[in-house]
Image (cartoon, rainbow, N blue to C red; front, side):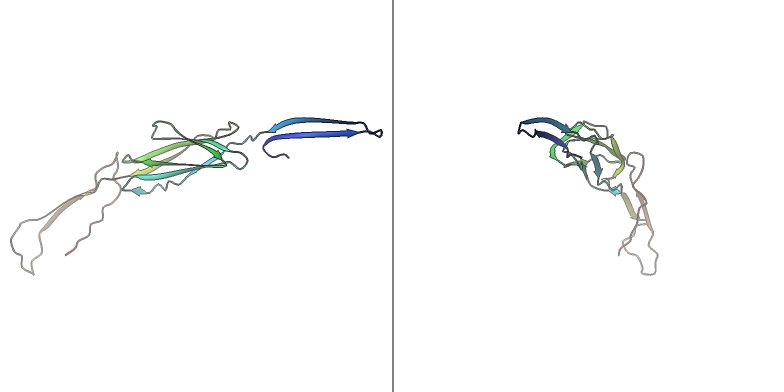
Length: 171
């Protein structure tokens, strides 16, 4: 087995009389396997823009390109010259189903099958709360139950709220 890349094989033949000939050939060994790309998206709810890192690796050759698209947007390419290539991207759109399509290509043109990570959840909208005392009086006795009325909603983000609201009371 030869390492990936260019090689030269030289043969020298010598007979009993001392006659000698030398011949050389050059050849290349190619990598036939595509790189592999992984992501660090955790698929949990987030309340601020989400940084996602893509890491492409190839054990035998150089990763030349790491391609990605966020939510079917513009295709972006990170170029490189090593066995590991990293690209960073930001998810900014509030949605329950943000997704990234990604793939990498090595120096021999081996292209990874396009992969997807979907279900990246971003909700930057705060819950809405209204709170009032009804009837509203200037003073309440310490034995009275406070007539508290409230509503609390979690606005819908692209069809779904980010989950159950937790209400905490403080005095």
